Length: 264
Image (cartoon, rainbow, N blue to C red; front, top):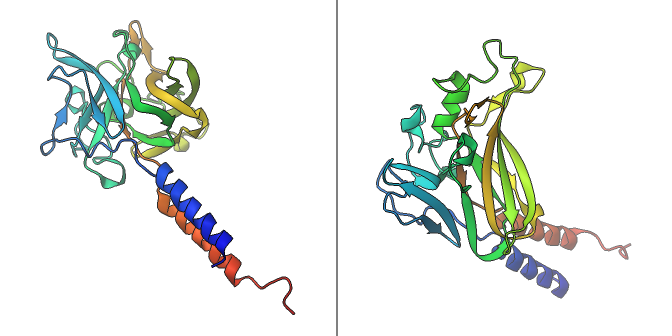
């Protein structure tokens, strides 16, 4: 292998090792089997990897907002009792733990959005999101407070949107990304969907951030705010370094095998 090719490969290995390091996987958090943490200990949040996740717990009403974390695998339960269940049943890639976000502002009360704050400002490559059971089955079937998406005919153009906003250390917005957790706006009803698998959201366009804020909105609105349950599930990852390494190694090998332009 030529010296330049070797140096290039080493640089790619170094870069991929940095970008491939997970910011937070949530598998460093301790939970019993099929259980959750919702902030009832009054700690005000939790850390995973190199990030901190906000939580507000009201002991009087035994309610919470911000982020909780869970490893519940039940995908069939619905309603308020299933607010800690990711519809996927597992974390992204089959891992045990994941987080549940709840946006109280979307429902017309509370003062803070669910927020992830980095220990040190940096670039967040992206993250994975899906629905939780409460929101999923509410949109699929309707409930006492929220409508069935699409309505009786299936033609009503409903949607459920997650917006992720990046902020710098001074609290200034550096960008936002929208991701539809459900979308019934298609002319062909067969294309309508409610997300039930982990989907990757690319955040590289933000550049360097200090924090991410998460907010929810919906086409189903009432007098006090959003009728759709204001929950989503999140798991944090970055692109696997192996992909970049293999691409780099493949390029080196191809260059080695290619005939020289000076060959007869």
